[in-house]
Amino acid sequence: MQEAIKHRILTGQLTPGQPLVETELAESFGVSKTPVREALKTLAGTGLVVMNQYKGVTVRTVDADMAREVYDVRLLLEPEALRRTVRAGASLDAAGEALARADAAADTAERSLANREFHRALYLPCGNPLLGRMLDEVRDQAALVSAVAWAAAPSWRREAAEHREILRLALAGDGEGAANALHAHIASFVERAFPGTGRTTRCGDVRTPWRGGRGGG
Image 1 (tube, rainbow, N blue to C red):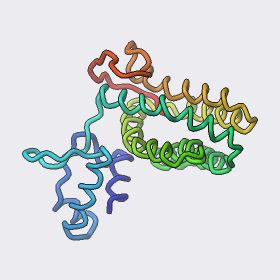
Image 2: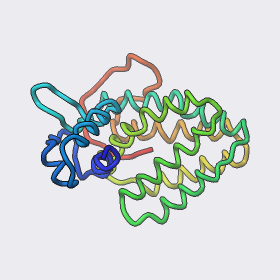
Image 3: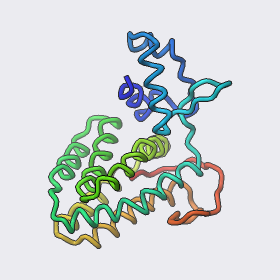
Image 4: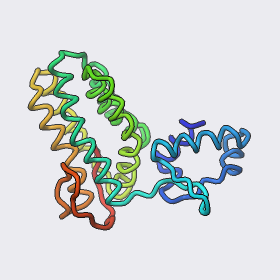
């Protein structure tokens, strides 16, 4: 149930700010309210939904603050994880397979899932399970930000080209080059989605309201 609701959120079937009514979801999935309630509690823990005593449960709203916080974590951790993956000589077959799935995707939801799998395949073999889990924790929130941005202006071709270059460098054993390319890839999303705010690589950045946006990563 958790994965089913999450899929609807990340594919835009349930939009940011939309109320999530247990009875309606239960009817939609053909189940009782109990599994829906438990799934919503779990999703609240991942940051995809918000539980409010007075307003009930809603899909988390995407704003500039949330996007920068999530992508700041990725900028700090993901390039280092890839650097370690390359240094360890770990297999990147899963990343290549994810790229192929993204290229062959029939719709936005399938392509988005493949892109998420690509990034995970780069950091998961880094040799530090805790580092992998930390990135997993922000993975869904990053996907929510991307889904909102892509709905405004898709940028699949650019991202696909950047993904291929990151993988090419990693397969060539250039860990530093791959990490730098990945950092630029992630940072460019923030800059495109929130022009003029600057890159976020440390705490305490000046914050501005959500202006809409485009991009991904």
